[in-house]
Amino acid sequence: MITLIQGLSIFGYKQVIMLVVGLILIWLAINRKYEPALLLPIGFGTILANIPLSAAIGEHGPMTILFKMGIATELFPLLIFIAIGAMIDFTPLLKNPFMLLFGAAAQFGIFVTIVGAVLLGFDIKDAASIGIIGAADGPTAIYVANRFSPALLGPISVAAYSYMALVPIIQPPVIRMLTTKKERLIHMDYHAGDVSRSVRIIFPIAITIIAGIFVPASIALIGFLMFGNLLKECGVLDSLANSAQKELGNIVTILLGISIASTMQGDLFIRPQTLMILGLGLVAFVFDTAGGVLFAKGLNVFFKKKINPMIGACGISAFPMSARVIHQMGQKEDPFNFLLMPAVSVNVGGQIASVIAGGMILALLG
Image (cartoon, rainbow, N blue to C red; front, side):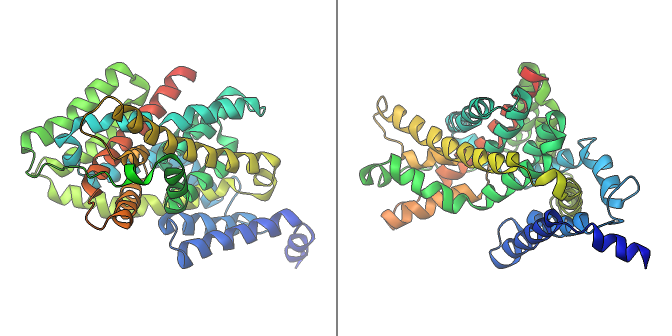
């Protein structure tokens, strides 16, 4: 009885607000299908973390233990990368490696956001953690934020996954603002045929070695991603590849979401910084999209065979959602304009580029 009275006596407005936030995240996951695999565990975990005197958090709380075991050690994000790697098919990129450049250009928003965050008063490591939201890659954002700014991990994680889910809403207006109808009507060729198995096996090994040599801080991120892809492409470990895609990915996603929620307690989350982080995260996504589109427009000045600049927006790592958005925009302009495969080529390149960008930030500021 005393515990009940104590719980009610400390039930403040911050706890009420966070319970509402948790319910909103659950609603977005179920009703709108916005990144449900992450937003639903985060939303429900937010409710658990904000019940007064909750046994789910604290020194011996299971959510806190999971956080220390999987997030503080950086284990969960890396295991997620194995699952992502096992799901990705790099064949479209291997047919046209040039598309990897668009992935690099679309990381522009990360660095714009870092500068903006510093100007708003964040220290450089907090600013870097906020800027990596623009990678449009949840595990990378969590990995960098946990290394540099664990106190900001909650809002950074929510912003990263929320804006990834909102790519179909964020990207089209930016693309239309930066392109003409004539540019959006440009058709692009896609070369049919397969890439040899040897090339598909060599690719993840080569990328790991090259990235590791030039950006050693990225080796854990890129290495686990490429290891997952090697499981898929080697052809002799289909059962492991399937387990990585399904069982491993599903289990770690659940644990990742509910672990992150342990940081979303009212006293930690309800601060002016949170709104600033959410705003800066949106800036990162907008400038990433703009960077990829403007890079394609710049290349068209020199290329005889024009590139549809919309595909540049796929350089963010929101795979495969961004590629689908661009294909749908192309179909809306011209039902016979099939941009899906060029867009996918850029999108998988963006996955690699975003991980390397995270590694560069770790190397420069670590």
